[in-house]
Structures are given as structure tokens and as C-alpha cells.
Amino acid sequence: MPELEEAYVIIAKHNHANAAVVEIDRQEQAQKHEFEKKFRDRQFKEDLRRYCEKHQNVENVLFLEQVRGYKKAQFGARVDMKSAIYEKFIKPNAPMQLNLANEVVVEESLKINKSIGDLSVFKNVEEIVLKTLSSDIYPRYLRDQRKSSQVIEDQVDDSSKM
Image (cartoon, rainbow, N blue to C red; front, side):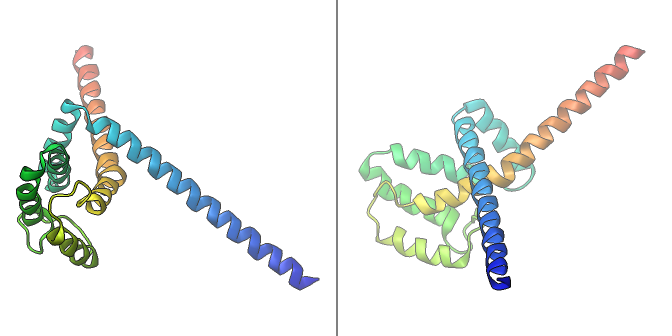
């Protein structure tokens, strides 16, 4: 019987751990969805770009903007755009190199160089960048926005007391 109890405890711990992973995944998906929705707004995109420039990580926003433009372009234009995006963001030592694992760079480089303008060529890198933006940069941006708002409110309160 002790073996059965031990097995039950192991299964319960495993199920609890899996539930926690599923909950984190749900939260990340919700945050990603919220970010993607906000990113469609021109003013938000501009504010986020300025924030990223100030914090020296604007390459993620610029990459997303260029990939979105790539997807809207005609086939002939996409061939040239593909190379420009690769050279600027993905190629090792690119001027605005994205923070990608070396394996991803190698794998995506091969795929991109074989591609002749297909719409989904940047899909994997786009997903990585979206995750970086939605789970790291966007939450920091929101925190800084709240802090800035609080500072302004405090200044208004201080000036009204005089």
C-alpha cells in the first residue's frame, strides 16, 4: 500500500505542475493577444517605438513593422524586402540583430535564403519577437507608463496645495 500512496502523490504533483504550466501558457497567450491588438493602433505603436528607442531595444518593433509591410507587399517586392529584412535583423552581426538563439538564426537563415518571397518565411522569428515584446518589453512599458502617470499626479497634487 505505501507504493500506491507514493504513486498517488507523484501523480498529484505532476498534475499540479502541468496545471501551473497550462495557466502560465494561458496568461502568456492572453498577454500576447492584448499586445497584438494594441500594436494595431498607430499611436500606441509610435509610443512603444519611442520607449524602445530610449531603452535601446527598438529592433523588435521595427522588425515587426517591416514584416507586416512585407506581408502586404506584392510578390516581386517581397523578394527584395526579404533580403533587406534578413540583412538588417537576422543575419549574424546584422546592424539591428534580434536577440535570437544561434540555432534559430542558422535554421531561419537557411529557410529565408531558400525562399522566393513566400508570406510565411518570417513566421518563426515573428513569433519569437512577438513573445519577447508581449511578455517582456510590453509589461515594462506599461509599468513605466503607470509610474509616469503617478509622478504627474503627485506633481499636480503638490502644486494644488500651494
